[in-house]
Length: 393
Image (cartoon, rainbow, N blue to C red; front, side):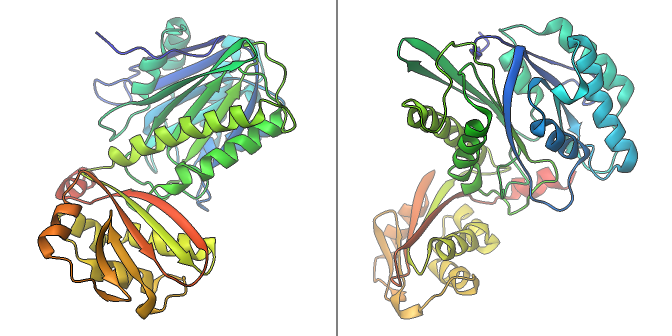
């Protein structure tokens, strides 16, 4: 029996195969029955895909009605034609809704540098509107996938003084994951009523605690986009940052985004292990983040974890070349609760205990620099031969 995805009230979705990819769903549509408040965060890559440039304009607009996306083609580095094609996608969807093109977000993911097959896109948009329904969430989630092995969806329920509301998230991501805003593509839908600036603050905060904490391969995409639509159909009192329900909404949104982000790490291209890198005792939070990312992105570390080798020397090396202040003789490192390094030298733990610690499907590397109160966490995965096989195509 196919898994279902409950959408918030007033939303419909669809996913279809438009022929952009072979034999797989490759276009998705999300539609709100009414104009929704929108918020978004985008890639900080200097090379931005055409749909990102379009969506930056859309989120500055007063409202939004839909998101239309395709996989199999990123529409990135496609020049003037790419920009025209992104706007054309929005216009085609807007025409079906009787709204302006700037009421429609457009997203693309896939191969960089190839023009969109607009004839297939146009036919796909027509089919999407014919198929859209409140039960179409999983079809949309599957259409978002590229090298993903599994679709990524989360739903959470909230009660605002007897007014039930829902937050539903759909995401794709497996490779090119090292965000500096959000990551991959994610669409967050809610029927809660919330003020636009408040929604943007909530999304930014939640992204910083989730999508901005993960890395698979250290690559930041040209297309990374996270969009949140809130259509107010739950009928609750409009949430602002001064509302009594602000913290509840924010905490629920943070949980949805965190769950989606961990699904991405677990589904990292070729990954078999999930590793949490926690740095404490840094001179500042920023320096702790630099040290954690250096460890998490090190290919020497990622391949050691693939081989279940507790080579803590590679961790020492990575924090040493990071921008964090490090005094070698103050560093402590543990694999979960198993000591590996004390005061910069081997802790004397038997090798077999360290091997057992890094052989688990999920483990934590705790690094204490013992220089201050700064701390940070980054979630990552190992790197296996399958990563190479996936990316030589």
